[in-house]
Amino acid sequence: MNKRSLRVLEFNKILDMLTEYATSDMAKRRCDRIKPQRDIDVIKTLQCETRDALLRLNKQGNVSFSGLKDIRASIKRLEVKGTLTAGELLDVAAIINIAIAVKSYGDGTDLADTVTARNSAEATEEFGNVYDSLTERFNQLIPLEHISSEIKRCIISVDEIADDASSRLKNIRKSIKLTNDKLHQQLLKIVKSDSSKDKLQDSIITMRNGRYCIPVKQEYRSHFPGMIHDQSQSGSTVFIEPMAVVNLNNEIKELANEELIEIEEILAGLSELAAEAVEDIDYNLKILTDLDFIFAKAKFARSYNGSEPQFNTEGIIDIREGRHPMLEKHSVVPVDIRLGEAYNLLIVTGPNTGGKTVSLKTLGLFTLMGQSGLHIPAREGSKLAVFEDVFADIGDEQSIEQSLSTFSSHMSNIVYIVNHATKNSLCLFDELGGGTDPTEGAALAIAILNFLKEWEQDVWRLHITVS
Image 1 (tube, rainbow, N blue to C red):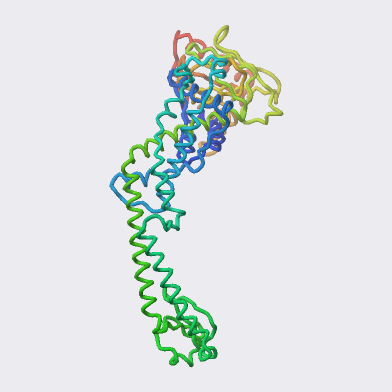
Image 2: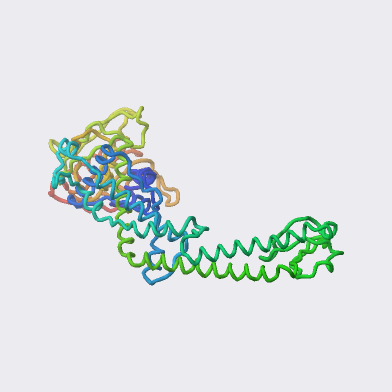
């Protein structure tokens, strides 16, 4: 499809609206990059997926993809046996948990009555359950609960590893607590003693450079043998680590280093566990992204009460009570548009603000939406034809940069359309021949329409150029 028609028909705004219904950034990017398809079998498959997702939403309620993140960078590191951070491992666990929940949603489907009512040709009954176009994706999700459970057991949050992650970590933290208690008891004896009260700036224990210290008045620094780690901005206070607790501070420092090493070991072990199933995790991510994208289309269709159009390759269009999706529901006037059976050329006339342009845009936009796998806001049974391309000359196309008047700009676009349109193209013209002398414009419009009508019948084709 040519980009100009996509822009003129505001297809990008439809995609912006669709994107809001996707959860993950990956699915949002998929929504933003949708392109109309030309293969009727592909289109029918896309429409079938949207329809079946909508059936599931109506029957079972919403399916949640909350927490679905792009972890492909983490997957690549797992593939080369790298170690993930606590946050990355929690993201892996989240993907696994989402896969488990979504698979349960798929397994719990009982769509027999609904599918029968909708006469779904794609659904088949097996083992008492109804299978639709999404069933295979749900079945392909691989539950890796043992990996998720182990990650959640060991990692409490991005910044906190559980004591029970390993027996060694538990013992190290127990030693740190006992040593901390001893150190604080020693320092409390110093700050609470009568001989120290007047010499300390405050009767508190503080920390400087990772070492526990006491705040001593500058003039009494010699009364407290130990290491000076800092002083106040005014210089009136020095922060001293008394010699009595140096060894305890050293011990805490060593234990803290041991704790970090053990945490690295735990993260490495969890990463190794995840790496054993990295292909399954990657596959789950792809399937979940597919489903997030498909259900976004279904949720979008539900928001405007959309229906699945019936497609054909005979050029037949039968839009029943079509509503432009970007107009307010309470104010939009439904329109019926038929084309391709009794006639292949349709001219719409009427007064200003009569809805002619909206009708043109509705037809063009429905075609783009339908061929992209999106339902259309129209009554059930509406028909759309599959077109190789959609051309649109709509709106004020005056170009100051190219020194073109409104008429010249329209003519340049019309020439492009006439030179590139085929019998399998949908051509939309708004006020064809406008912007110039009414008589000459009408004659030009008739000539263009006659040409397109003849070309549509494969009689002849004229290559037009403008100098």
